[in-house]
Amino acid sequence: MEKVKENMEVILDAKDLEYRELNEKIHKILNENPNVKKIILKNVLGQRFIGNGIQKKGLIIEIYGVPGGDLGMFMNGPTIIVHGNTDHAPGNTMDDGKIIIHGSGGDVTGHSMRGGKIFVRGNVGYRSGIHMKEYKDKFPVLVVGRTAKDFLGEYMAGGIIVVLNIDNKGNDLGKIKGKMIGTGIHGGSIYIRGKIDESQLGVAADIKEFTEEDRKRITPYIEEFCKEFGLSDELKNKLINSEYTKIAPISKRPFGKLYTPDLR
Amino acid sequence: MCGIIGFMSRKKRLISGDRIAIALDSLKERGNGQGSGYVGYGIYPKFKDSYAIHVFLDNVPNYDEIREKVKNTLEKYGYVLKDEEIPTKEGILEKEHIPWRFFYDFDEKYRDIEEDTMVKIVMEINDKIDGAFVFSSGKNLGVFKASGWPMEVAKFYKLNEYKGYMWLSHARYPTNTRGWWGGAHPFNLLNWSVVHNGEITSYGTNKRYVESFGYKCRMLTDTEVVAYIFDLLIRKHKLPVEYALNAISPKFWKEIDNMPEEERKIHEAIRMTYGGATLNGPFAIIVGTHEGMMFMNGDIEKESAMVGLTDRIKLRPLVAAEKDDLAFVSSEEAAIRKICPELDKVWMPDAGMPVIARIEK
Image 1 (tube, each protein chain N blue to C red):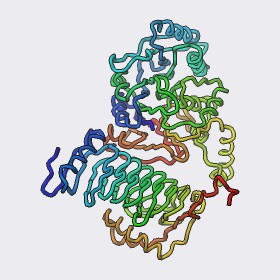
Image 2: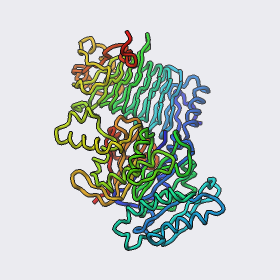
Image 3: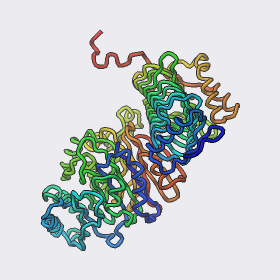
Image 4: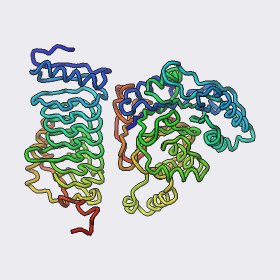
């Protein structure tokens, strides 16, 4: 095991480690060094469950490579920075903290998130933001730099998803391809930079007017996104002042009468 | 569940089977050790124009008799050039079956119909000979599969001793049917090989459909039928590959309604004619072939190709990547980077849209 340095930083080589071994090592470091501030994981390749259930505000886990599924699941507090792509479900049922992905997120990014923030510079896969939910001060946020595949915000019950629709250089990516957006959505809102047709929406989703109130709501998250990825002020201003399509639920209980249409 | 990965060299560079084993081993969390398998294309250069028929014989004291029955069936239509037990390493797996291989040529009089005859032979053996299952029947390719973890199966079959330009593989997590050697993937018929992550909820419909054309599903699991659908649609019915893949993972009626007239008619026709070939349920598949395929633009591909495809609403993962002459398709990016850390391009294919890698001309 690498020694904890003066500045409370630990470097761990994950090469050829099984996910259990790697995660046990991470937990051992945390148990033995309550003051550790940063864990740097090198050569990560496919190891699942990194950062699961860790409750530690201020801790940074920096990952070089491609972590496996369920990154930061149930996590409460830490910041995970990924220099690479992630597999399925980063931020699964995350409670609080931040996940910053410099590459792309896999399918179901932000699955059932109940708090915290996820910033993805690249794309996210199918069903991202599925089942996101909010309760009182718990409010999950997912911001995507490029685009999202179909079923974005499926069964979404709370929080915010913002899709910026820009390429790696900040240029507009043009018409959004996603289909079935917000299928079954009954809470929260999805903001997509650019125009969306009604035909791209899923059942229960509706296009609402994008107001100045909405712009105010998403501005801090766009600012934070730009700060995390070092984007220029010019680009930041462009993103803040762009037109977005707001997608929100038609009603709170879209399927209330699915099986009992005759009952009142 | 289940992990799949395949790669091909578009320059037909021969690559050792230990590479695919290392990649599949990194997906073992997606399986449960109840079935792993590989198929290599280009592995039998000495017999490249003959059929390589891999058969599981029940490991019983009189397995010789079963083997003779298989041999007699083959010899009705042609000549066995060589037959032997597929070399295996002892002490790794419990040998439930004895894997045997025949290198085989048809008699002159069957030359024009040899593929149809081979299909008939495979179905006859699997249906009629107790204790024998053909699990590989193409030319210059071979399937190696068993109940076990990816590395166990690779070591059991000494995969490092084979070299191929295309390899597909699968780590199984049996869900609806029990794990057994014949139920491991890939499933092969002639030059078609299929590995599959997911479940085919339309299996009953698909099985009835292909059985009406003489195929017999005898492997006690759903994926088998996919290999037969590919053979039927692309080899027998000569559908352009894009249409065949559309039949398997069709467009929604809502999308079809919004298409331009001509395209709409084609897609309507595909859905109506090939409803029985539609795979319902979640799936990600990789298909390998050197059967020859026709493309919509009129191109005819006589050489090998690798196709990756998911169901149209993407209920199973699939990632594609490229590096120089290598094309990859996998359940997870990490498995690709395990054997090829630096990639030129990595992407997530759209649901229901095929990724097709072809040999460079």
